Amino acid sequence: MNLLGKKKRAQSWFDERFGISGIVKFLREKKIPQHKHSLWYYTGSAIMLFFVIQVITGFMLVFYYNPTLAEANKSVGRIMTEIPMGWIIRSIHSWSSSFMIAFVFIHLLSIWITKAYRKPRELTWMSGVFLLCVTLAFGFTGYLLPWDDLSLSATKVGTDIPRSIPIVGVWVTKLLRGGEDVTGDTLTRFFGFHVCILPVFIFILLAVHVYLIQKQGMSLPLAVESKKEKIQELPFWPNFVYRESVVWLILLGILFTVAIFLPPSLDKSADLMAPAPEGIRPEWYFLFLFQALKIFPAKILFINGDTFIVILILVEFLLFFFLPFLDNKPAEMKGKFITFLAYVTIVYAVVMTVWSLL
Amino acid sequence: MKLKYSLFTRRQFLNGLFGGWLGALMVSFLYPVIKFVFPPTREPDQVILPFLDFKDMKPNSVKVFSWGSKPGFVKKNKNGSYWAFVAVCTHLDCNVTYIPEQRKFFCACHDGWYDENGTNIGGPPPRPLRRLILIIEGEDLIIKREGVK
Amino acid sequence: MMWKMKRLLVFSLLIFLLFSFFLLKLNFAQEVMEEEQNKITQAEENAEKIVPSPKDIKESIGIYVFVVWMWIAIIVLIYILRLKIKEVDRLFYIRFFSAKKK
Ligand code: FES
Image (cartoon, rainbow over all chains, first blue to last red; front, side):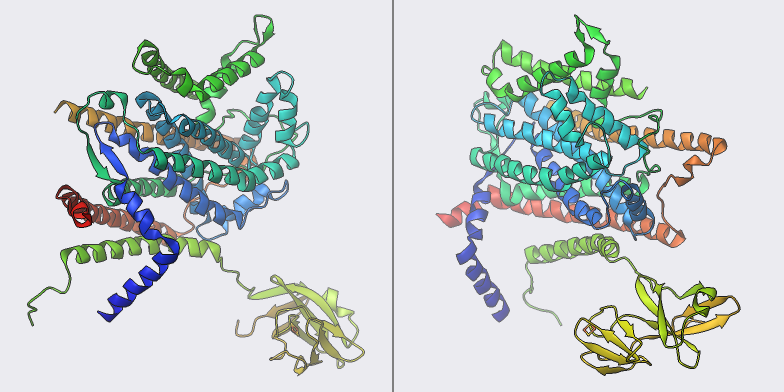
């Protein structure tokens, strides 16, 4: 009894200074609507789970990784062969990145389709698009770090794409590569991006994103909102968090099982002078882009095919970024068309991805 | 003995069970993490050096070799016998040097002194320098950790 | 009834999506393995390639034990979580917390 009383006292001491109970109260009052599209509410926290795993395993890998031309490949090899459990940690980092990006895509498409970006959530969507960019940049920079043939070629191709943008393109490529070509400097630079610059950005963006979600509450899909009946709601804490924990546990189990039984391998150190190996391929989440570049003709309407496609991508990206403003009448024909576009995007991405694998 | 009232509510029991399993799971995740972060850095059992390199040493001088990731000294004594030390101060891990004129080992970090046998004679070092077993076998100089066959 | 079916559909789609990524990787890993086998006959160039695996029998047994234990723990935890969810939902529906406040 005495012990319990002490615990209470300690809690209230802490609470007085920190105000935990205010947060708990807020979370208790935060309501999660329950309807048939509620499943999508879990994708955000799944991303968060993989993000945390990325941070932890990343901290661990950076203890042994050496971002230099001579040592990068060797140090990854050392992690995989000499350091106890090293291959599992690397495998988890690599798999978890794939999972995270997969869930980012699912999260994004679900928001597109349920139109959760409607007023007043435009800024949440925009911060989300930035988060998508940062996440993909994480994937892209991380792919180079093991410095084997595959990653070198993928980086050469990837950093050359911006070159096709008129005027600024050349400078973007130079900025990414740290010079005209991909060299050891590129590796060091990418390492810097991967472990210093991008983490700062992702934490800031994440804070904004999560804050906006807390401020505005969960959005309701259009179909549910228009029904006008009373929707069942559950408190976020603890009812919804327990449900999320179930999802987390399952995902964690799947992640570790896959990571243990299908660890990524490591090729020999990349040779800057050697010709590109056969079958080069970026990570799966860039395949649709990769394939598009492959199949585009060299010249379209007097302009370079590459320039054309890069400009196309940029325009698409801008439209995508301003989607909440374009989709200002969600219930009408225009809104329906925009939802339809989401499905088109899915089909396009899947077809291109499968095609590039054939 | 049968208690009239249960000491725990069902809720407390569930919470305890949940926390216990969760804790156990977390510990099993923590184990590989700890293994990874603290890799075993094993000291070599022995190193074998060509004796040729050490043949021409002057008496009362030392020559460095690498004992794993630490420096070691092969010391030729005045009577021509060879000894081996780990050349690391027993105080706070600095590398020591040998001063032939004074026939002493010296550690610059906190002014530590050892005599020519490696015994600590001045300054903060608490213990003598670590001796290694040195065997000359034909062409080879074999240096072993104590207690290794 | 109808919307339960839909939920099932969405669930299975999600799981399919998830696993299709594994398949991608799996397929890729197999290809790499085949390539490697081809190359071994050609030259020893690929000798440097590192394909990670448990170091010895002890480690591989340890890994199997770990995976089994992890899944058992996860299943038990999910079972307890379901009980807890039932409890907190009931408390919420009888307005346990809001009644206390007013
Ligand atoms: S470390 Fe040698 S005297 Fe302190």
